Image (cartoon, rainbow, N blue to C red; front, side):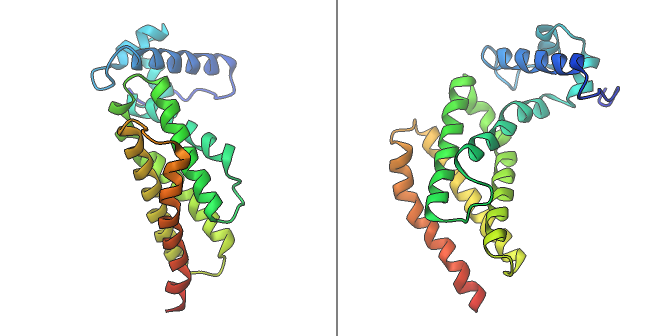
Length: 198
């Protein structure tokens, strides 16, 4: 069924239909487990047919990413300037962004814990790309592969710590979490200069 037709993303009817699908999906996420939810459930709630659903999304996983993962960068860009250097303050703001994201997603999606692992790869990738951008603008002459490795290390660490914080019930404030974690991360960033000199 995927690829029945390619809707014009600027057509108001297409925009309205896409929003109906997103709203129906959000309703389903709050009433049904993601893993048992079907395309037919979503289409029925959105008052569309399955072919229309597939014209907008290839499957429910793509829909999940459109709903949650794409919103992730909004949280990051609210706190971190895309042209900022990767400093202690920037890392702290990235931790706050992820804490905000997890907390907001928990409120929006009752069964967030069941869907978070599915979108983890997408979020790590977005965060990784963002950190590569920060590192490259600050270190334009450094080996790109080293910067990419550093970004992966940082993005996975930040995501993992905040995901664990969320899973354990957010027992401490984001600022308390950042105070503990930022020095460890900054220590890793400072090693970039040592590696480049070797």
